[in-house]
Length: 127
Image 1 (cartoon, rainbow, N blue to C red):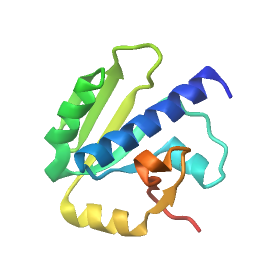
Image 2: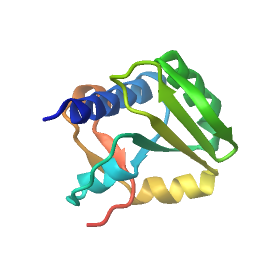
Image 3: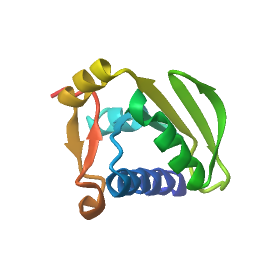
């Protein structure tokens, strides 16, 4: 496993822990979600999907975890890490009805730390 893939794995488990510890919903999307479904894909960032009611809670938590917001709109947050060992993070923010549809269609993936994460919920169940 390369240091980049270790950094991604570490970031995924860290976000899963934060979500559980703070009661914040999220779904994994993007390249890491595609890899979970067995499609090889190179990716250097983590992509998240969150409901709009939790936007500020997630933003504060992400910034407290060593990230700085470099782009912000109602529907999107983009973060760079203050550490070269952490991957960038993109967060899509959606309304409640979109969240409910995506959450319902998601599946649980074990990224190695189920005691902290209960598995990471991954969007776009292709099975």
